Length: 277
Image 1 (cartoon, helix red, strand yellow):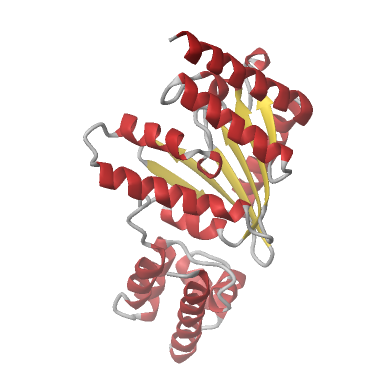
Image 2 (image 1 turned 90 degrees about the vertical axis):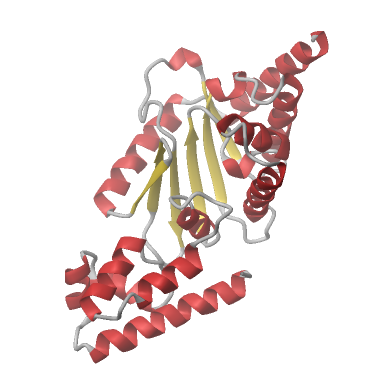
């Protein structure tokens, strides 16, 4: 679904929510209290500024007695089989984010991955997957990354643990090209990258992948990931705590210039290892 038609569909979702809420005699505040969000959030859903999470859509159906209408509509708009169920909503949010900040303790973030790196990660996670499935997922990840080429691209800031730079995902030459790609994006000023060196030792959010997103007309969110699961946070207090931890990570990481030098050095190390194999 193209971005324009997707937005029009979310506007329809919001219009229907407003119509059915008013028919049921609820104010935004009253409906919000029953589905455990603020009245302001209900207003943002109705204006298609913000998308509800699945459990909220389900509670709206229960409260307004709409026979699963909002859950079915949500699934049609969010569900994308190219992505894990728990991640599809994050992809949707990335398209409207004005700022994305990530911390990667083990893997290069998806928006920065080369096709070869993505392919290696996919095969490692499922060695019996078909080539067709792999190519579909590689293409989906490449499509996500196009937001960094748009004129209206979000500000993108990522912190990579040195572990990410050193592990040869795929092969040494694949890893060298992956780090070259990140360095090129930095030089083009499309992304800002900091490296967190081994010498830092213990650090905030230790071992936890985190993605923070900010929006023009909606509150910020935080996304964290575990084994075959993800958690999208939009509670203001929780998001603020994650933002504070991310600020501490930035303070501990190398400055951008030193980070670029470390990335380039790691790329050269992988290249040299590839030449000796």
